[in-house]
Image 1 (spheres, rainbow, N blue to C red):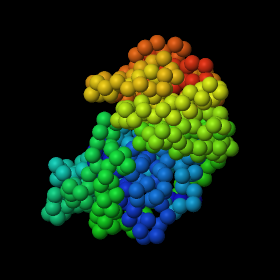
Image 2: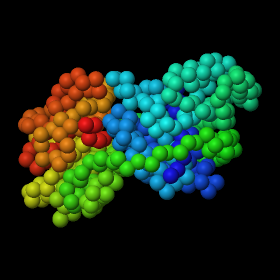
Image 3: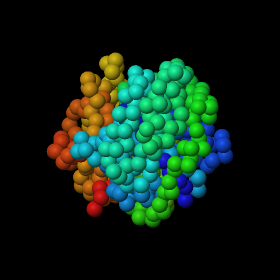
Image 4: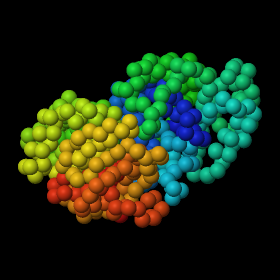
Length: 430
């Protein structure tokens, strides 16, 4: 079983993703077998890890997954590697509106040390108070090391190191301000690697800086063993032969769910709606994941073979399930932010439009009474700028937020076809 470390920060935007990617690549170049995971409900940051490792990063969600499930999934992610690096989410102690589900909660559950990445671009001696506060706030959290990011000069680094010296925390090194080390953002977070032409160059630059400026021996010495666990409770497959849409418009699917389905004996096939592909003729379930269909409205509207094959699957009784972007495509029409309206599959009665001034986001506790083969109570999240109009007929989910406050019902069910804006992460703990 591997050792593990958690890469966290005081806040979002501190450079966790770039530094995690660089650490993974630098360690791999040393001959260390590395794997990675991302804390919380994030498809995009995890996809950058793969640029360095060539492996798919897992998601570990301390709000949506029970403690036993977290330990089991961490142990699974650590199988056949030397070191598992887990990137945190937001700030170390930031979680759901209910106050739980933070990176700190994950560190405590897994009993793993934290490496704190601090953006010091506008900071000097005050670094000591910040790191001291983060390392002492909770007795069950071990902030074992610190990496400084966006240091202005060697003199600046010496000031910061001197301030940190009285603290019993390992100084691992510093990265300077560097315009090469940046990833652009768009409306749902960082731009995905396949849509960011310089992604590989940024990964190479990050690895190069880490190799030169971070003490990798000291970093590895801080890692702690990940405990073995066999208490996995996976989500059962949607069917025995599941066809999954997968391309730039349908990119948001959690690896642990795909792995669960395979482990349960399901046969998975993949197709690209943007290439006018459709589900396999023998599929008994079709999954349309979330993604960015609003960026590809015209192409999806003109994908006649995709539309025909989805209609055939619906007609032969396949269970068809769509999440967020996939749910939008199952509807009648999709209106882009620019106001252009495109015809969608028409398998559900609603239409969608990218017209919200603010993101609709948050964790969701969900209850369903539908053909979904999953337990009645589920946990997931919602994250989109679109709104729904039209008759939703029978809804798919009753929903509350992380605090248990009632929300509007979500989604739609029409016989064997269903979907909602919710991304399912796991079944609710018993």
